[in-house]
Length: 187
Length: 347
Image (cartoon, rainbow over all chains, first blue to last red; front, side, top):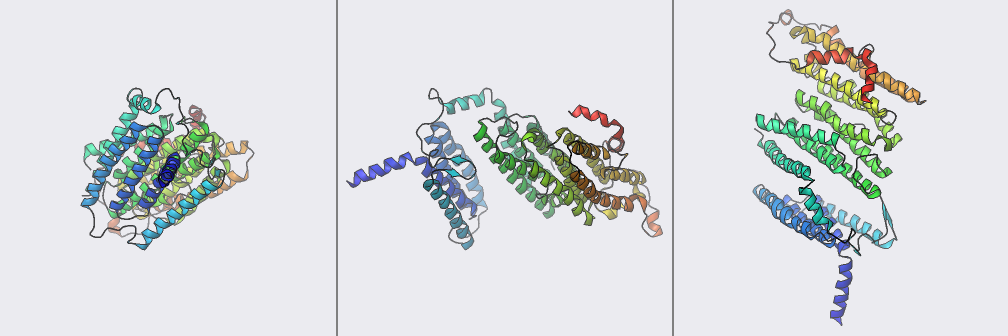
């Protein structure tokens, strides 16, 4: 009986998985922006990256979601973690160590829960644009054609007739590293 | 700064603005804005000092916030129109957000607070780039979305800018802050006429860039950054006193100099739309601008402050600084008024 209940709850939760993941996404960014030490900010980003990957996967973009894990978490965040570890202090600030950080985190959580309750309770949400309750957060269909996967076609397009975007983004990343090193060089 | 790095940064700066101006996809325009901002920051930190670091930080924070607001407006527009083309926006929320974002980027009041402080903390040449080149990209986007801009929002911000630009510059003796407040006021004039006739915005931008370029080149010639050192120019390079006077009067909008052309055209265009109180207000508050230009003119060209006899006999060295394009810029920024009908090339 309890197993059936657990299965029913998991089934229902799977329908709302995007909604749950979106909530975790926002919580992670609240955790980052309440300004603990950068290491714990990186932890918040990891959770957010994982939740974001889950959202992308739920919409059918399996390749791009796993790219998030590989490149964003496994590449950029690792480098960020190493550089932060080089510059860290003896007692880094966690969310619970400083009242200000804790207060900001709780404030963000409270505001987010208010918005979530507003979205769940009322039939529609009309803050900036209107959407009908949970309609956009529960996946009935992935949108799109159903014939081919738009995600893979998009990636293929990026390297064929969207090659200018690859050049621009590649140049931007290179210039970003040059800029960071130039600024921190000081002299 | 290492020359090859400087070339990379300048290339990225130019590439970013070009991408904003020439792109038809909102994502590429946003990327262009970000490239522009990122490349400009180490240029501002060319001579590292706490002042320059503070200026760069303020610039980064304001411009990054504005880019984020721009992206939000683009996404709201995408939600309501289903496409990414840079045309007029299809939703009033998106339009308001984007107008505010571009106003932050330009330094329109009430988002003008960063302009004097950032301009003051950076070297003269970098300040020149900040006040001329960095205005091209936001104005090009404003030009393209001008049919959908909320009239009252735009007019409020621009009239406030003209007032703040004139009023705020009154108590300044630092030349870079004076140029910053002059920039705020001119941006106000440019965005006033944007909902009515965007061509005149481009005309005003062209004349403003020429005049600001001239002023900065005149300052760079003697590395003057304060009114006090500008008042000593009669001793170093006497011709600069006359040229400074002419260019300052042109910036103040006095006929028969070219600075009168955009103001004249803007007031004429506004009266064609049966608006009379607003151009009167604009012309009167532009007098505040003219007052501090006149004060600079007075202390530079019209008055010799009492000084010891020693100071009057300066050994004249041959100048080491070359001012690129200075004669051309001076001619354009003072003698262009008879060519006013040629503004039709901007149509």
